[in-house]
Amino acid sequence: MRSSSFALLFAFLAWSPAPAATWIVDAAGGGDFLTIQAGIDQVAAGDVLLVVAGNYAAFQLKKDLSILGRPGGVPKVSGTSVVQTANAHLAGMEFVLLELKNSSGRIVLDDCFVSGQVYGAGGCWHALLIDSCNEVHVSRSTIEGKDGDYYCEGTGVVIEDSRVTLTRCVLSGGDGWGDTFTGYDGQPALDVRGTSEVLIAGTDCFGGDGGTPQVLFGGQGGRGAEAAGVGWSAPQARLTIRGNLGTDIRGGQGGGGDFPGSDALWAVGGYGTLVISGVTVWPQTYGLGLTLIQPSPAQPFIELTGGDGPLATKRLNLWGPSGNVMWLLASLKPAWLSVGGIDGPFLLDPTAILIVVPIPTKGQNLSENLLFQLPASLVGLEDVLLTFQGFATGLGANGAYLATNPAQFLVRR
Image: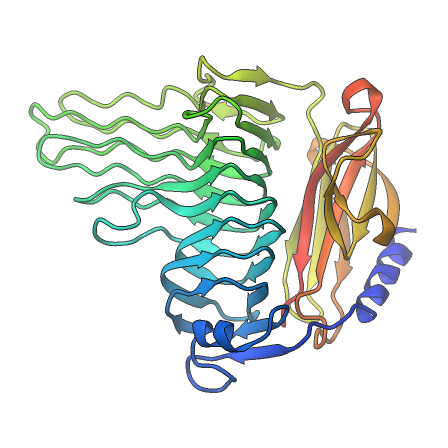
C-alpha cells in the first residue's frame, strides 16, 4: 500500500506546474547571470534562480523568488543577505549572515549552512535572524553563532514575533572570547522573543562555552550559555521541543581561570512557555520563570533525509508512541490552518492532499522508515515543494489528533 502510494505521489510530481522561468547564476560565466543580485534584479517574480557552486556577494531579495543551489556543489555567499518579501525558497546555500524580515507569506530554508563567522564589530548579534515573519520553515540546516573575538560573540538563531518550525537542524551559539584577565560569556544557540511560536523537532541545540582568560592568575572565566532562551524580553513567546534520545539540547561549559566560569545554569532559560517532549537535556534544569509543560507520552515528530539529485533515495522517518497510528499526509500545496479535531497547525492545503497513509509507530527512539526514490529527471520540477505531515491518533487535547512538525522536500537539479 505504501509503495503504491509513493509511486502515485511522484506521478503527481510530473503534473506539477513548472515555475514561470528557471535561470542559471554562475560566477564563472557559464549561466545567465554572474551574480545572485543581478538575477534577482532582472527576473520576474515567481521565477527560480539555480546557483552553481562558487563565491558570491550578499544579496537583497525584495520580490517573491526561489534561489536554489544546484546539488553537487555549494554556492558560498559572503556578508549579510536579507530576504524581505512575502514568499521565498532558499536551498543548498552557504551564508555568513542571513536575515528574514517582514514576510506575510511563507519562507522555506532547506539544506543551508549559516556560519555567523564575521570579522570586526558588525553582525555580532546573530547568524540567522527571523523577524516579523508569518511562517518560516527551516530544515536540514546548520546555523552557528559567531565565536568570540575582540569585538563580540554571536547567537545562532534569533526569532522575534514570528511562527517558525525547525526540523533536523543543528544550532549552536558562539563561544566566549578570553582577553588577558576576563573570559566572556558564551551565547545561546536559539533566542525566541516577543510573540513568537516556535516548534523544533529532531534538532540539536548547543549553548556556547564561556571564554578562558589568557592569564589564569586572577582571571575570571566566562559563563556557558543556555541552549535556548525563551521570552527574555516578553513572556508571550512559546517554544516546543520534540525529539528523542538522539536529540542533544545542551548548555555550554564554563570557561577556566583562577575563578572558573560556572556551567550553564539552564538548558533552556527565560520567562515564556516551554513544551519539551522526549528529549534529555543538560543541565537538567530550566529557567525559574518558564511555564514548563512535559507531555506524556512524548509527542511524535517526523523528518526527511537523503539526497537531492535525480534518482536519489529519500527516507522519511516517523517517531511516536509504540502502537499508535499516525496518519501521514502529503501535499504540493502548503498552508497554516486551524482545523477542528486536530491539536496543532494543519500545514497542508486540505483541497490538495496527494496521499493519506496510516502508519503504526514503533516508539520515540525507534523510527518507522519509508523509502522512496526521486525521478530520473528533475528538469521542469525545480522549486516544487513537497510537504509531509503526520497526525497521531488520540494524542492531542481532549483526544484530538496531534499534528507533527512538517517534513519538506524542495526539488533542485
